[in-house]
Length: 414
Image (tube, rainbow, N blue to C red; front, side, top):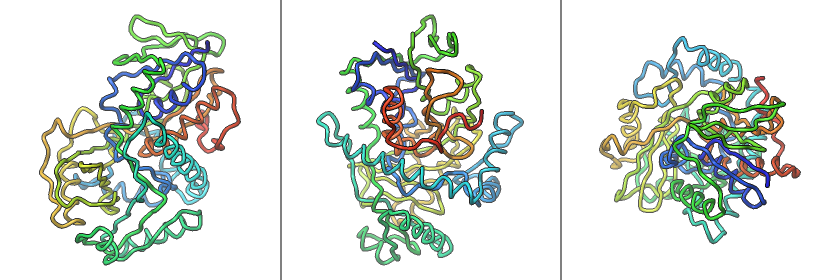
């Protein structure tokens, strides 16, 4: 039986295992955590065909420099003399242009739409019930200037085939049945949302029922290589045999790629989220507060608030000013929605795997015959998880690919 080893137990690794489990394969998932606090569990739970522009976009470099001097800003690049960080920053700068946006929007949109379709199918299965809602997502703008930019983006989305609705302030107040102090916004009806921690828990249980093996709280220390094939993965005093290896280790994929002498530029983009319960008059629709770069997601009886992108930040430390900035933005859009600063252990933070061009790495490695790369999804890991997992399955089992992955070639920096 073919042995497939997946390094990484986030949404991409789990979805890869889910689709691979439909075949007669010996599957092992290795993760350095216990899977309770991965980047996939505490995110905003948004499925976003609306996000067809990558992070490396025109204007983001200028905004990044501007935000560097605001401790509560939603985006921050912590400069240092770290060689990898400097190299990543330069590559990011080179890709933040209009041509890159034009080349990326169709591949990203198609992959997101495919992923949404797969989520709809997954939600119909008896083993899964993860509160999938197809209400769409609101983009809320306080400033007329920002609203104008968002409307231009929405018009482009409409030309690409997305179902959008441009709304003024009164229409959004009526939609939410509450006061929302904004200039206006856009409802992306093609978007959806779910409760990620429920999904992750159900995926793990399903895979255990399918006899998928888990090696948790285990760091990969090395590889045994022979004739351009990865034969074994070393964890502690064990060696796990592999016929095929899938690198889906999120923000840690870059360091593992170094061990294999592969160039896979990657930085961890630190983000925060907080989940509150028993909130009266919480928003009905999930929303992105555009100027604040804050995500607001109702999840059943809970409300999750998340945001920030810190490149070069220390994961072990909670930046209180960033968290305060997230919370402070809420009543600026939703008067009366004032949330207290939570206990520190209730503040979730994780590193999002961010490539310099803002596109994920999906596909076969040219360096090894049996290595598949599936990582670098930044803030769209949950949104793109099923589509990436499906492509991994099709590559491993040598099927015709459902999507053209050329834009996501993992060899593009080699």
